[in-house]
Length: 68
Image (cartoon, rainbow, N blue to C red; front, side, top):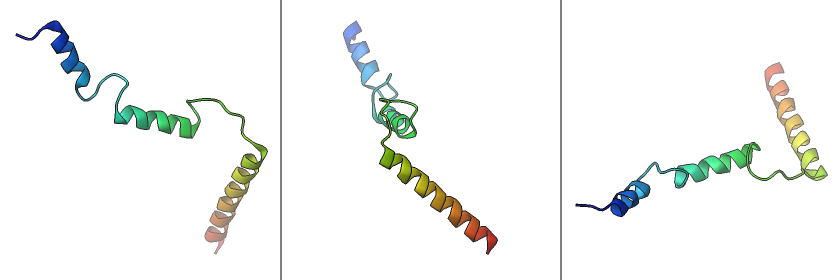
């Protein structure tokens, strides 16, 4: 008969644990990538300019493709 410690150990080591594992790590990575989680760092001026330039280029390309 298994003791209480053994049962807890089995439950924790199984897939779908609470907060640990590959899926949880991927979720946390996506949250920090999107900007809803993780540390709040101030965006540099160069980074802002680059973001807006890339956004403008993408919008310009879409407009060019749809007006042809």
